[in-house]
Length: 187
Image 1: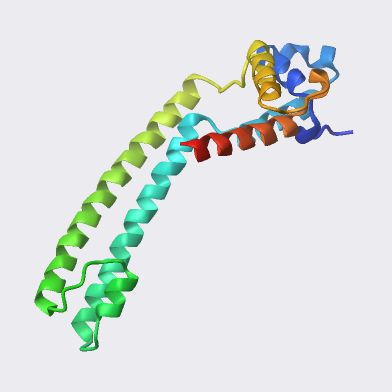
Image 2: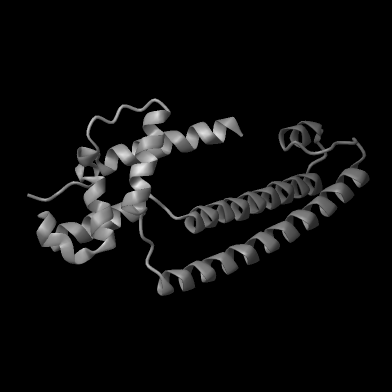
């Protein structure tokens, strides 16, 4: 029977990350361990990977802003219609003077292109740094002593954890996710 990551004991996970040779001793097949290890990494991205995701978001947002402005410029070139509504939808400053609005859009486009280039360069740097870090060091989860400390702090925060030995990876991820949301809301 294949072990499920969400039901796998988090304590066993910590012990196996500390010493993978304990698979047989802990009753875990090597194939199952490899699958569980990959699922852990997917469910718990490192700070570097989260930073990389944020960098991708910035690049996409800057690109979207450029596209929005290019669309408005194209609209101004071919249409004599009232363009105020489009500026409001795009949340851009509107004067009503075609020359001033065109000039503003060109400056805004240049600024957004520059931001896009900067964010893209930062993203590429982060990607290469992350690739190097992955080659040098395989990410490990928290140590067993840290796990007990985290579980105690969860209990102090109101969580009910009746048996540490049966605390699963799924439960850990759920509590960890909830804690992150609470911390983010408090900021």
